Structures are given as structure tokens and as C-alpha cells.
Length: 456
Ligand code: FDA
Image (cartoon, rainbow, N blue to C red; front, side, top):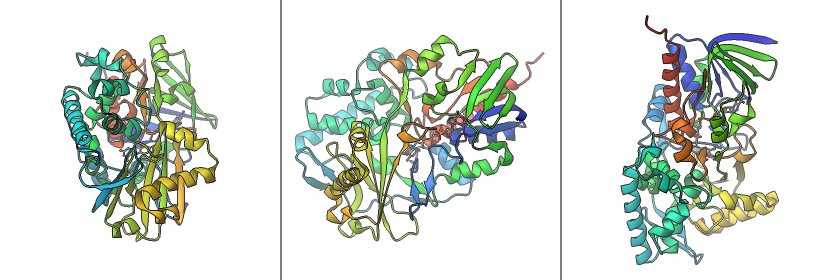
């Protein structure tokens, strides 16, 4: 049995937990980070085992994500821009692939102007939402009581316009069907990125990548902590009280500390036993939070053949199994890499297929966007985070209908010595690495205040 004593124990070596640990250590507080996996990074995983360097999890940085950009710069990492020269492709309800430039998908003139009108209305509403407290909006209860799909149905009679606008927060962000989450949850997603228009603008939201992969952020953060990061140590039980916590992990490891930070996705909170049990409201709240589902697919080719054809690699369709795809070629690698995403019920359907049938269905979508050459990649790789025991979905957690307005204000409130933090609880940068970093900084500051001696 190994027994450690620390001021603070952090559960989870993702970006959030590692930022919190570094900040606490810099302030002179002793820490240990317990990580369930055999690697750090959580939802950041850069992997070269297939023969090409692939970003299996988070990868893009947008200009508003200043906490992430600062961290990347401080760690001495370089970035490069996503390839975006040339035309994008849209496949509409008739199955025809159309080329376009700009942000608005090429539909009929009426549908295009309807999409623009809807985005302007959503930008107006988003500007009224505080991403740190969306439940405070005067219409919060109403907006949290109507599904995203229902809200768009009230906004427009144009079905194609609705399908396209829905995609930006449903398939592309929360990775849940638009009938399963609220309009308020959708507006929070937009507010956390600065505006609804920012989500529509792929050149903004998917702007830059880190040379060598984004997992270097958690890897370098962990390096600074040395032996204070312990891998292969899933936390199973937290005994808590006024004096602090006793945290028990696999491998007969026990840490006694004054505070614990749970830097894990909220859908995993209830995989830990709490002694005594958590307050009733916490138990109920946790059951209203869930992750979406997305399969991220990489296809690697000898060269980026679509570029010679005048295509940027950016492609969308609310009607194909792979609803969005991009040029994801690496810096300094002549090979062409496409990345595609299949979310929610499309992912259900694909995951029900045997692997070969699924691969054929995915490549069929890519061939629809980029032509027949897309059917024969040299390397094909699917990352399915729903099967990962220590994540169980993607990209991050959101509330079910009504949950954000009902429980949101209590989401980050500590329970005794137990603190909660992750990208899933962030305001700005919600569901993104930027949010994970912001929450890591935020929770470290809360813990420091809690540990500070009370003035006489
Ligand atoms: P994260 O989940 O990373 O870390 C939690 C850690 O806790 C994990 O390491 C886990 O193993 C560990 N853990 C869980 N339970 C435990 C237990 N009981 N005991 C010990 N350890 C435990 N973001 C972005 O900014 N740009 C992007 O392009 C994308 N794209 C994207 C694609 C895909 C496929 C995914 C899955 C995600 C993204 N994201 C993204 C989202 C981004 O990756 C995510 O929001 C952050 O990495 C989350 O960081 P956290 O530290 O909050 O949690």
C-alpha cells in the first residue's frame, strides 16, 4: 500500500487538472495528480501508431481562445494554419455536391437569405447570454424548455435552412440530435465562442493547430510536475469531511489531502464512491449531464489530391453520414489527410455496422465530397471516444432539457472539500481545451482562497 499526504489531490491529468496542479504548485501548495489512463491528456491524444501523426481528440485553436493560445506560447509550441485555399463543398437534400466560397451553404437564393436571417437573429440572442451564467437570462426557463429543433421550427418554415443552422451546435458541437437538448444549451455553446456567427465561420473556429500535436500541451504541463503525476491510478472512493479528504485509487494508493479537485468529465463523477454520499441535489444534477457521440475519422492519402482540383477540403452536409470534413494534413508532411466527423444518430447507425461496411459508408461520404480518389486512402483510422472507459463520449457534457436553467448555477459549487472543474463546466471556451485551461486556473484560485488562513 502507498500512502501520500498532500495539500491538494487532483483527479484527472487532462488539460484542466494539469493547469490547476501547476498553478497550485507555483503558489507553494503540495499536489498530486491521479490519472486513470496510462497517459496524460485525456481528450487530447496525438497518436502516430497508424503510420501518420493523427489528432484523435481535440486539435483546433480559434482566435478567441486566448487562454489556450497563451499556454501554447508559454510552453514554446508552434502553430500552423489549417489549409483553406479554394472552394468548399456542400451536399444538399438532392444529393448533388455543390462548390461554394464563404460561410453560407449554397442552397436556393431564398434558403440562403433565410439562413442569413436566422443567423442574425441567433447572433442577437447570443449577445444577451452570459456564457458564465446563461441561467440568468430573463428568458432562460423558456429557452431551456424548448428543444433546439423546436426553437428553429418556430424561427423558420424553411426545412433546409433549419437543417443547416441546427448543424452548427447539434452535429458539429454538442454531438447530440437537435431534439435532445434545449435552445438555451445551444445559445450557451454559441456565447462561449463569442457569437453564433463564429461557429458558422470554419476559418475562425477551426483556425490553427499545434505543430506535432495538441497533446504536447498536457505532456509539457505534466513534465513540470514530475513524480507528482501518477498514471494507471483510477480513483474509486473519496471519503470527505470538515478535515479534508482521503482519496483511494487502484494499486492500493491512498492520498490524504485538504482538498480534492475532480477534473474529470461530469458523466464520470458517479463512477466514484463518496463517503458520506453527496448531497441529494448533486446526485440528481449529475444524472442530467451527458456527453454526445461522435466518430472522428482520418483518411491519409499519398498527396492532398483535392487541392489540385481547387478544393479547400472543407465539406458539409446535414444529409450524409459524415456531416463535416476538412483538410487535416500535417505541417511538414507531404501526405494529404482528410478528417471527417459522424455524430449522434449517424454515429449510432455507423457503429451498428461491421467495421468493413462502416469504412465503406464513411468513404462513400468522402467520395461524395471529394471524388472517387477519396475511396482509397493509404491509412484509415476511426477514433470513437464513446468506447473509451475514461471519457465515454465526445466532445464534452451538456444538460438534458431544462437541466441548464435548473442546475447550472450549482454546477461549480464545491461540496465541502470537493471541487469540480473541466472544459464541460466552462463559460468561455465551453467544451474546448481553452475552457479546460480557464477552469483549471479558476479552480486553483478557488482552492487557494479556501486554503488561505482566515484573518484573525
Ligand atoms: P479530459 O477528459 O481531457 O481529462 C480528464 C482526465 O480524467 C482524463 O485523462 C481521464 O482519463 C481522467 N479520469 C477520468 N476519471 C478518472 C478517475 N476516476 N480517476 C482518475 N482519472 C480519471 N477542443 C478544442 O479546443 N478543439 C478541438 O478541435 C476539439 N476537438 C475535439 C475532438 C474530439 C474527438 C474530442 C473527444 C474532443 C475535442 N475537443 C476539442 C474537446 C477537448 O478535447 C476537451 O474539451 C478537453 O480536452 C477536456 O479537457 P479536460 O481536462 O476538461 O478533461
